[in-house]
Length: 77
Image 1 (cartoon, helix red, strand yellow):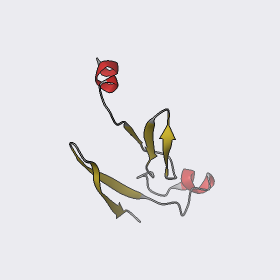
Image 2 (cartoon, helix red, strand yellow):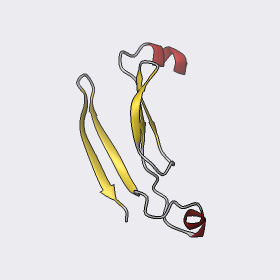
Image 3 (cartoon, one colour):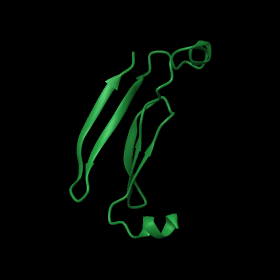
Image 4 (cartoon, helix red, strand yellow):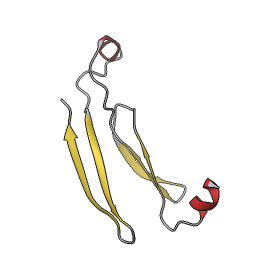
């Protein structure tokens, strides 16, 4: 059922999380947005050199016909 719903849309955005960086771009006719990770700093992150990376929550507000209207960010640390 998901492919049918997806194919019926005019605009497509895919939102991803978990990675320790932000990125957005167009891929195969859709927008892809990579959000920053919400994870805290621990020894694994220090050993992997992820210390000092952006850690924030991002909320996107969409209008049903006009698309993205606002972006809200809350920095964790």
